[in-house]
Image (cartoon, rainbow, N blue to C red; front, side, top):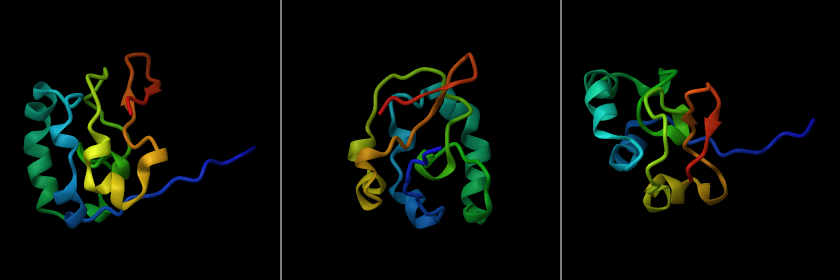
Length: 104
C-alpha cells in the first residue's frame, strides 16, 4: 500500500488571516451565510484544537457546505505558496453521493 505525502498547514490564527477560502467562488454566498456565526465563534477560540472549520481547507479538510465546484483561487493564496501546495489538492468538495472531488 503506497502513501501519498501531503503538506499539513498549521492551524493558526496567523494562517487563517492569510486564508483565501472565504473569497473562493466555490464557497458560495449561501455557505457563507450558513456558516458565519460558527466561524466567528471559531475565530475567537484556539483554532489549533478544532477538528473542523469552514475555512482554511488545506488545514481542516473538506467543507461540509460546498457541493459543487464553481472555480478555484487556491493558486492566489499565500498559504498555498507558503506551504508549497502547488502539487497538493487542498480543497475537497463533498459530493451529494458522499465522495469527494477536487476543483483545484
